[in-house]
Image (tube, rainbow, N blue to C red; front, side, top):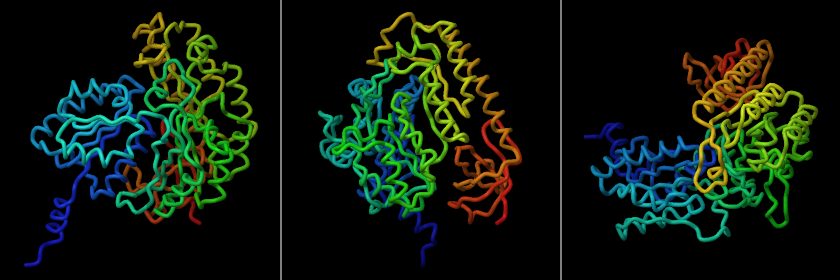
Length: 457
């Protein structure tokens, strides 16, 4: 008797080795999780959405914010039950919390099998085999900074898949040592990938259907300084535009002190580069910026914003900002509000300062009390919400080019995509438009998105 297709599919799924990945934190972590999937795909693993059926559970942690670290610990605690029911499943912890708290994780969560550093992902398949062979807990961290730890995998991996928008890490680490930031301690010093390696990966992603690339790094503006011969970030952008068929290019994150005139001019000179820039300012007070070791002043930051808008008037701007840095006073917070009101950001990612291990700021006094931090954050977010809504309402009536990324989460047969400035647009249209740039008339503006009407060609 012939098996039904459903039975066959179930049998094939059961025969596969299954991998479950849970990612906390930033786009860099999301990219690292994709690397894990591609590496283990070459070892015969398929991705599952159910950790209970997985042979390997990979938890990619983030410790940039205290809340993300707490969520990671909570998940690791809940996963103990799965390990009890399935002792053969391997629980692997990676990311920044793993880099910082390797011994603590092993002691607090004895059901964890492997703790792996952010720069050792390329060795994950071998370490999994070692743990299975020895049946002992392991941790793996590189002893030097020599390896960039960002090997490129070609499309032979069965898990080499991509969406319309694909992320590509161009560098790792950071040399800035902002006093509140743990990145140099968990991801090391700056290490740039060779430009031709980046080009090759982008070409593979385009061959798999990607239309837009997001270039990632802790400080992309300083890309290429450690390469031989050196290459600037603006030169890399021009290479990508000229040597690949990518339709759109975006990048994050930029440090204001390294935002050069050449890079700003790229927004006018490179058609593929979207007029969108995320430029964290963190605080408006020069006194607090100095304590943060940010290496620029409010005036210098605002001058660069003014220059950007001279070069590309329609550029969309966003930023990171924190409130409640040690020693911050009411007058310092008012300087932050001054910057927000002056720049009129399209979006703002704001949060309360929290002490992070190893950082200089964690030892600074006096600390700002939680009540004050919450009040400042609410005031800041209310101001930005007004600005964002005003900007979205100003879009009504305009005609925008939208790269269609897929079905909208709002449903109702709608598609979703982004304008060159990065604004989300939902509109009714056929699924055949996915991956194409279409003309859309904006008919409504909301707090976080726009509603459009497709203009038939």
